[in-house]
Amino acid sequence: MQASPIKDTVTMLLPHQDPRVPLQRRHRHLHTPRSHRQFAILTVLTGAGIMMLLYVLLSLAPCLVSGVCYKGYESDYSFNANAARNPSWMRHLPDDLNITSLSIPGTHDTMTYSIKKFHLQCQNWNLTTQLNAGLRYVDIRARVKDDHLHIFHASEPTGYSYQDVLLALFAFLDANPSETIIMRLKREGGPIGHRNKRSFQDAFNYARLHDPVTQPGAAKHLFLYNGSAMPIPTLGQLRSKVFILQNWKDTSPHGKNEVYGLEWEGPQMILEDRFIIPSPSHLEYKWEAIHEALEKANADPLDNKHLYLAHLSASIGVLPIEAAAGTKNETYPRGMNDKTGAWLEKNLKGGVRTGIVIFDFPGRRGIEAVIDWNRHFTGSLGK
Image (cartoon, rainbow, N blue to C red; front, side, top):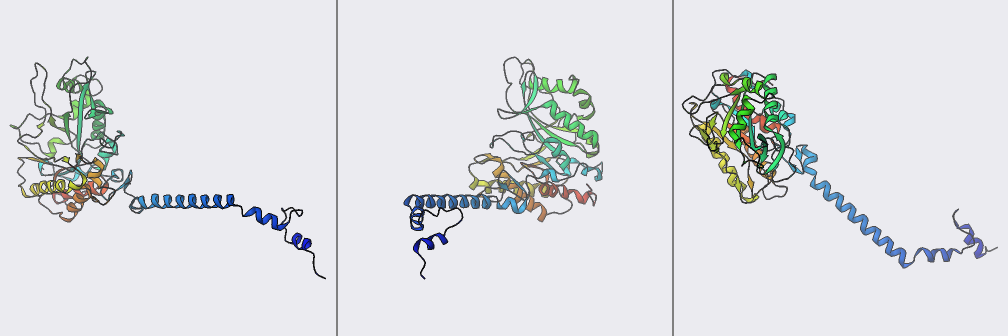
């Protein structure tokens, strides 16, 4: 006996379906133009989401592979200074060694690690971390505000004072008396506000002689250098000391322009600082200047006549992070840290020096590539 159409319809129902509604009507309801539009919109949105996820993953791929990454920039020689552990690498070096014969890693605009503006930030680790990593040159830029020195990059405050800097340096040297720190102290601009009575030099001397917070450490750790008539000190003379590179002149009405350190850009200094780079595509000109400076430091005799400094930093037409680590695109994918670090590793040899190599955003490999150039003085530089 042939089944009725109604019974066939009932046997095809799912548990949630109403047996009183014919199957044909239900099917017609499922295929309305509105449901087609909804399905198409859902498909487009899903596809767009997948494409966006793939784009993000691909843009982060170098960071995921290497792990040496900061704000989307990837570099083998940058960013992870916190991974370096070299708090007392100078302890193996002889006391009679001239500091002009050393290879010393350092940082440019040392205190800018808390600045949020991309064109002004040059570091990503605090001062104590930098020192423990092995960096022994610091670049401190100050202005007078409320009669005290505060740290700036151009007109941008870093949020730190000169007192903060000195306390960190003194604490490090107390813990690591074998080390020396070379500090460039620069007058970064005029005083802030109209109530200041002290000049830059007066504020410097207040911190050194009268501030109850910093005076004890300054008396113990600041090394005062009397100028070019005095030989550049040896490492033994500078252990547990801060050696000043003086980048200011007293502009007060009765200023004496007293000497406290080696004169910046003076006759005892050979300096590379080509920092104005029109665009990332011109970074090769910066590398040429660095390479020339390193070759000169290598070639000149170890006669204690000059202190050599090479800045890896650049700005104006490029971001500091681009100069250090390279661009995110293919315009200039290898920055100055990578090119310099690779050169240092490839050309490592005894009997010569690099001088002071000054980084933005240094990494462990870059720092230790500089330190390794001192091994020929002792044969070993333990951590």
